[in-house]
Every structure is written in structure tokens, then in C-alpha cells.
Length: 446
Image 1: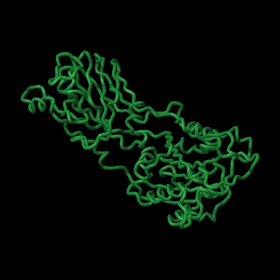
Image 2 (image 1 turned 45 degrees about the vertical axis):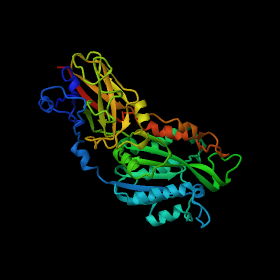
Image 3 (image 1 turned 120 degrees about the vertical axis):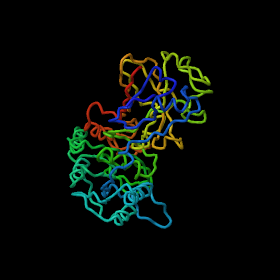
Image 4 (image 1 turned 90 degrees about the horizontal axis):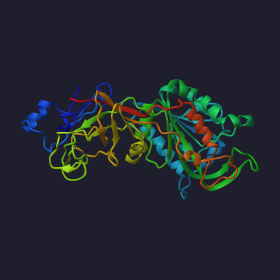
């Protein structure tokens, strides 16, 4: 399907969305545009036509099936002191209680299981008992299970590859066999074999909470145990499952939080996108800056569009539906930094400061973001314009939160060799992570 991006460039450039990937465009035929304008070029006040997302998107994804695991070991009890009328719950208790409640009641979740990760095997429990444990009923606490063994056991649960597994733990890995310290990354990678085989995604959410009680460091010298009285300590929530399901759980179930995050394997098969007419009212957030529309011949604002020559370049707006991305990846600043544009046989770039969140824009209710692309060199032959979001690598906060010696809890709080644990996760995935998404346009010149 071929459509005109803008009446201003229809004499020189047409843009077609690849139907198999995108399925929706904001465009009109030549006859329709002429009919609206009496055979003349459309005036600058023409509003963007409605652009609908693909029908498959509006049908909605399948409900989630979730298993939520809480490590119940002696080392975790300090996050979950018994509640008292005159004491505030810890940050851990507040967040995990809310996460469990939302997991149980969210319309996105069709089935929720709650389990306690004990020494030998996860033990299914009721939501009510799970909630009571978080609020301080930790009498069942058992000696901790080594992290690789715990992960392998959780991912070995029946049907785990098709579910979202939510694992709550301090993720401290201090191998009893000290020779395994040199193999920490390998042990974690091996434990996540199912992730590799089933092409699952892993999200790591990190936060801190007051900790009161006995802390069991991985490094046992000079103290095997450390008594703490409300100092902040790190804890983590790992979300593992099919990429689309993990993304949906993060967006629709997890509470809003400032937790640090890392995502691996979180890729989208389709991102609804549409090319949008640039002749829009000046009051629209899609309009170019300045008065009037931009003249593609001069690059300056003009009350009328000059279309005799587009050699100097052309701009148009693209609307995207990025609702399936995690909140951190939907921020305009993040997108502006990481989005990549490629035009075979030509030159294209993202217009600076053009990425924005769409709110209440007529005709674009099915889209969450808009941005502008500038083509400064047009290909002579039909070519593909690609807009992609490369997968970010391990974020910097992971190195900031790692320590080689946790025997003396530090400020800011850190986790023993966290960098190697996360490196083990990263090793599960290909050396070059696939892009989070790619959308494609076909450009042809008349």
C-alpha cells in the first residue's frame, strides 16, 4: 500500500508502510486529498487523519499466568520483622505486599500462584499466608539455598516456560564450595538454561529497604553474622518469562517505583506505527516549531508549503504505540538517546527534541508517542527506512551496587559480586542483543 506522507511532498516522495509489520497508516489517496482541497494542495490547517492500530493489537493479549516466589531464608527475615501497632512496615513489606496484591487482583492476570522458596523446593501456599509471611510471620524460614540452585528449581517447575515467574530475594550468592567463586557467572548462566532454550526474557528490579535482624554476608571473615538495626539493604525482584508477558507484567501489574532496572531479551515482534501528515494545526503538539508549516525547499516556516523542490530534505512525523515497553524505555529522553534511523541509499536522522508522549491528540488515540524524522538525502531507487531501538546493555547501576566484600555492609548498600551475577544473566543471551523493536517504511520517488 502506497500513501502520501504530506501534500507538500507528494510530487516528489511517497512512503509506504510495510503491511506485514505495521498494518496501519495515516494517509489518504490522491483523489481524496484533491477532493478535500478542491484540487489544490491541502492547506496548513488540515488535521491529521485517524490512524488506527492493527486489529490484532486492539483484540488484546492473552491474560497472564504468574507464579510469585518469595525466598524464605534466615537471611531474608530482616526485611520482614513482625508488625507492631507502633511501627511502620519496612519498604520491602510495603512493596512486596502491594506487588502480591496486584498480582492476585490485576485484570491482566488470569491465574496467580504464590510459593515460598525454601531450602529444598518451592512450597505452594495461599495468598493469605504469603501475605502474612511478608508481614512478619517467618517461622518457617529455612537455611538459604544457593542462588543457582534456587533459580534452576524455580524454572524447573511444571509449565514455567509459559508463565511469568516473579522471584523475590536478596540474591546473595556465597558458594559453600569456595572454588565456585571463580565460576559465579558460569553457574548463573547454567541455572538459566531454560531462559536460553525457550527464548525467555529476564527483568531485574532493584530496591533497598530497612533491615533489622541478622545479616548473613557471603564473605564470612571476620564475622559470620552481622546484627543490623534498620540500616538499608538491597533486595531484588526478578521477572522471568516470555518477552511479551514480562513486558505486560511490568507495565500493568508492578506498582510504580523508582527501583533500578535491567532488562535482557525484552524484544517486541510488532510495534504499531503510522506515518502522520505534517500539515496540522499550529496548536497540535505534532506541528513544527515556528509559525506556519515548514517549507521543505527553504527549511524555514512559511504560511504555505513550497513543493517545487525537495532536494534539500523533508521531514515527517511518525506515531508509535510503545505501550508494551517498560516505563523506563518509554521516557522521551531515553528514546531520543537510543533510537536509531537507517535509510538505505540516503540519509535520515531523528529531529532533536522531537520525541514526545501523545495525549489527547485527535486521530491518534491508539498511539503513545510521536517523533519527527528528517530525510536529508533521498535514495534514487526504492529503499527501506528503518526505525529501531537497539537493546541497551547492562546499566551502570549494577556496577555501583556490587562489592567484593559484604562483611561490612556499606553505604550505599551493595550486594556481593552482583556484577558477576548479572553478567551470568547477560551471558544467556546472544553476544549482540536483538533490537527491542524495528519498524520499516518503503520509500519511493515518483
